[in-house]
Image 1 (cartoon, rainbow, N blue to C red):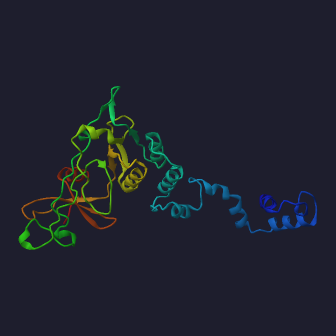
Image 2: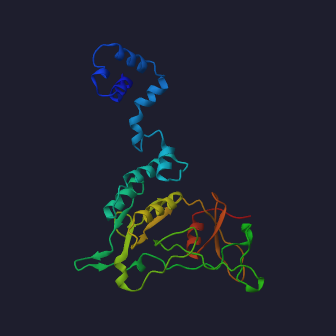
Length: 283
């Protein structure tokens, strides 16, 4: 009967096409509706559910529409789609917070001031780390060109890459270049926004495998003149961390991402923190 009503609404609005009375035309469309394959009728009956991220059967098509990278977990995919669906426009803290929470991130947006009026700007130095530039990009154990702190070897010197966790976002590209340092001038501190737990200063907990998605969403939503301080712990890291032998007189932490096979340098503090949560050893 639902298929017949759909056909009825698609017909031209004229007396000749009226099917509200018993006539041959109505019998024709009733037969057409009744003769539709069961699979087709079921699909048509449930098509309304396809406009909701939580129930759509066309998840892959919606991901293409919004330019989303599918993950292996369907629940996470639906949360990401719901966030894009909800992002109708706006840059207020409440709006950004709402979109992030719709995506499944239990985070809260906090303003730049710590008290007021008069408003006193928080010092972002208290919640971030100044970027450290690593000495090495590669190692002999990574099956990549070896970079050592020894110019006489005539090898590339890889020393412009970020080697620690800074806890803030300015912009990101496809490289591991360090962000600009936090400014010391208090006049710039009102241009920071803080994203973390419900109570300011408490870190939010975010799955490590969703970090790129989380950061992409923040950079997409935030006003471009603001820097974002991320007060969060990224849990469940898939990185394997080890401390290799000395190279060029220095020792340094390296991390392997099993998903991509990419080796990355780590700062000493980050390396020790990650290594303390893992029992992985390298033979």
